[in-house]
Image 1 (cartoon, rainbow, N blue to C red):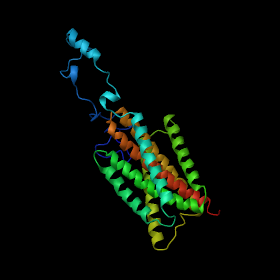
Image 2: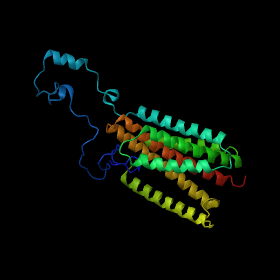
Image 3: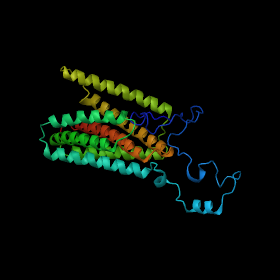
Image 4: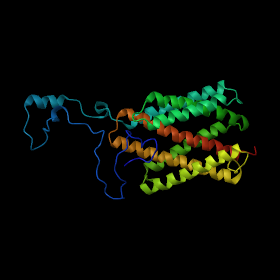
Length: 292
C-alpha cells in the first residue's frame, strides 16, 4: 500500500506499491527491503527444504551457532526505533521552545518568524529527499520548537495557562487517536484517505485565502466567533486524521522490513502532525477564551 501521507509517500520511503484491502487483489510488488539470499542459503539450498541435499555435520553445526535473524541482525526498523527517534525529536522541540520562551522578548517575533520559514524549507527538503537524514530532522525540530516557544509565550501572556491547556489537549488527541487506531475503531482505507485529503486541501485553501484577505485589511471571521471555533475544530480533526495516516505508515513500514534509519522519517511525520494539532489547539483555545 502506497501511503497517502505526503511525508511517507516520497520515493525511497517505506511505502509499497500495493492496493488497499477490500478494493481488489493487487499484484505484489517486489519488496525493496527484502534481504537477498546470503550465507548458507546463498546457493538456493535450504537445509530445511525436504528437496535439498543434506549438508555436512560441520555446515549444520555452523548454522546452529549462527545468531537468529531479528531486528538487530537485519537492521530493520522496529517500533522501539520509532518511539526512540520520535521521543528525541519531540525533546528537541521542547528544548528549543523553552529556549525561545525564556530568551526571546515577548513582542519580538522577528527571530521566531525566521525560524518558522527556515523550518518550512528544511521540512520540504526532508520530505523530498530520497534518504532520510537524522540531523535534518533534529534541525527541523529545533527550528519549529523555537517558533512554537515564542508564539506560545506571547499567547500565554494574554491568556495565562493557555500553554498547559494546549499541551494537554494535544496529548489527549494523540492518545485518543492511538487507542482508536490500535483497537480498530479507525481503519485507514482508500475511501477514508480520499475524503480526508479532500477536506485537508479545502481547509488549506481556505486558510490561504484568509491570510491573503488579512494582508489587504479584510476579515473572513475565521479567527473569532462561531465560525472561528468551527474552523479550529476542523483543523484539530485534520491533525488527528494525519496522525492516523502516520500510524498506518509506521505499521506498514515495520511489516515491510524498512531499514532502521527510516524510523527518523516516521519521527518527522509524527512531529509534523503533532505540531499541526498543537497550533490549531492553541488557536481554538484563544478563540474560546477571547472574552477573558
